Length: 60
Image 1 (cartoon, helix red, strand yellow):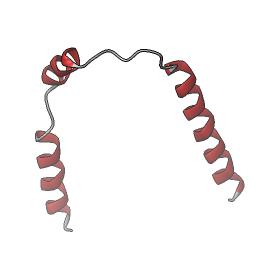
Image 2: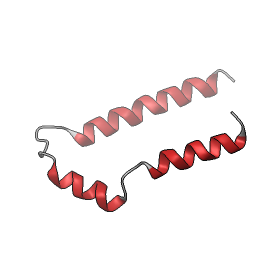
Image 3: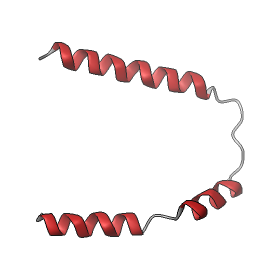
């Protein structure tokens, strides 16, 4: 893929995404989610990321 092809690809991809306004309006149509421990999920994801980064830096 040439650099020009890549730029065109990125532009087409980004232009096909909804605007921020459209995205926010779409959120209002979704059903609320209950019973999810968001803080716990974020903590777990951060812990896993830190473990991967630690492992990667030890390999160097």
